[in-house]
Length: 466
Image (cartoon, rainbow, N blue to C red; front, top):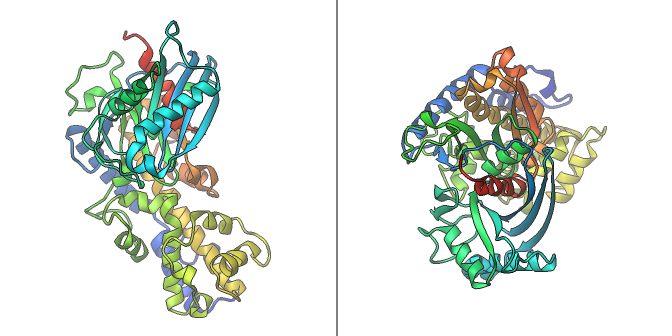
């Protein structure tokens, strides 16, 4: 593991005080296997708690998805993917060889939809999509089966029902909390006379797993490493001791871990720095989503900004100069860190542009730019290592699965775009599995789990029970 003397983080020409500050950051952000091992152990313990009872730190929510696709299924299925600002309606054609062809239409949520008419708005978007393509079923044609990806907290009560716990992401439609969101949507579709049945309510990480499993049947986990983070995995129903429903023929069910909340409230075991604590304190949800705040795209730019301000306050970065933009929360986007990490030009021109134009602090030195690059690297690499904690703990939960080839489907901007994220995450996982176990593990980019995955779950939900 890296240490303060690691030459990667030694800046030629830096003052002793600047290098000392960097060394302090290396000690905080470069995590040892021993540290990670302790957290993995605690993560496993919290998983067991969540399997035994509701209301625990890791919620381990049953998805009611109890089958695995074979990759041989064919046909056209539909999905609705509701995000925070956009809505997509999709038609997904499964080719029977693990491949899928999609067509979709994107709609921007209106302010009225966000605050009043959401479900009628969704129904109108479905109507537009079907009418524009001449796909609207008439009385003689089969009802369209549709999956509904709903990325808001729900208490799921069956494959196609779930009550809204609360609104997040800027939506606040009155009269919906505590009600079944599928029923609300189904009623809106009926009001328009659409022969469309919502057959599956889908969490995006569950969708990612099913999307991966259609193209790669031995998929065991679906993970989102993007703006936020979560994971879903196949668990034996016998281990889900809080489950009171019938035992499925397959003996297993997909669970949504809701792992962004790991270590929330307690702040007991993740390796927080003062920069993480500052971010949490000033966030809209203090002491919540603790794990997510250390690894997700929404937050990493702000962690880096806090680090850089700490150095600025000691006159170790930009000679103590700042700007209104640099001082504003969330002004450093995680994409800026990605750009900085890969800037290998002699004068670090990309980073110069970020500091002087985007952050509006003129006259940066080459040392300032190197400091920016080191901070971006430390924050990004820590995120990748910490991401391996939940992944490793979940794989070790099912050692039986690791005896055979197993795939992990991953979606999200951090995994897809942040430099070296995937390789650092994988190499970290490898240190906590046996060589034979790790040899069986593959990682794949599972694009559009919230769309394709929802359509695949709609397909599985429409199948007759064994």
